[in-house]
Image (cartoon, rainbow, N blue to C red; front, side, top):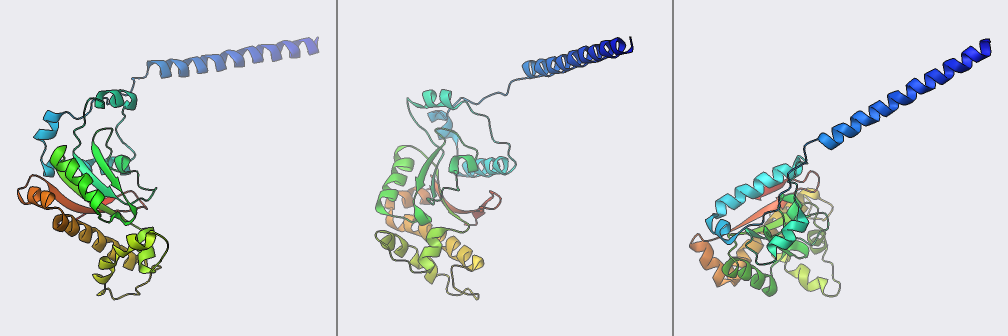
Length: 249
């Protein structure tokens, strides 16, 4: 008799426990299905919207986007819809020249989507004829109103230039970083690639040299900048926390 009571009690307990789990799961399912969906951005920039922008507005937009990136609150986007919407034409806000470094997802860093930015990437964010032609296309032909040259923390190309690395076509590329090394001669610490502060100084001077090279080697872009149609500015990306520090003009 006692065993029957125990057995019955165990069955009753199991039944209650099972129903409790089902009710809990049901509540969770209800919460999931009734939760408000996240609104996805699917609109791409139009010609009219691009025309209404100023270089200063775009700079503020990039700064605001970087804050969202750092706070892990980037905009939710329907990329499939944006691909289709951008197919008829493109009207980007800016041209960004970034290093080749895989740790810098440029659109994400500024919380921008498809059709927002022209991205030029090359090791050491140096300037050459092909990049100048690309920038001229982006600004003069396609209407972008900002060129942003962005260097970054712990740049491998900068370190290699400091170490005088010579290897294949890398040698000629690194030679374009040498002016930044020369401009950093007044640095009082050790002039070696293991000195983080020195690498940062050279990287910042390299950004400034690239800006000057753009103005010196592209009469088209210089004329646009002189007229206030575009701005050509620099920035430095911090790998450690994702912050973009804009270099004062």
